[in-house]
Image (cartoon, rainbow, N blue to C red):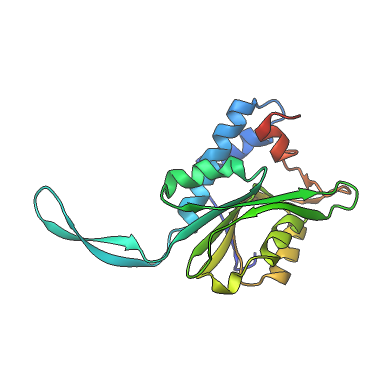
Length: 208
């Protein structure tokens, strides 16, 4: 496993991934378990963010606590990434939120951008949210237009990834940290992850 790949190894996450894979899972259950996984990924991905000491007054005394040193930006890649945003914000409710709209051409499998609104990355920790890292095309296209050199760090949080997407993404962005619940077997001939869970956007938005 590449050192930039961080698997979320947890019994409850494995259970939630199984629920997402099941074709009979309702949209309500699908959204709930995607949120659970996003929470777990957010806890893992932010575990070692730098802190600064602060003084706080408890009801009994003054003590030293900690605050994050740098701002955090959570940017879901639309539309499927929206299914992970609430889970991330459960962990960091004061995170800055950005949005990147990408759509894949089903014939060429190439993505194109239709919307972008991301705050200044200067000294910020950027977390891209996209439940499926398949070919990696959408993530790479989204990252190409971002001034990543200004960020303190940048990471991708995904639920399921394919080896092909991991390889292509890290080949272009070797400093990217990828936090993922499971790495699946392969891509099929139309660029979907196998065994995967189908189209995450359709299942989250009830547009099957």
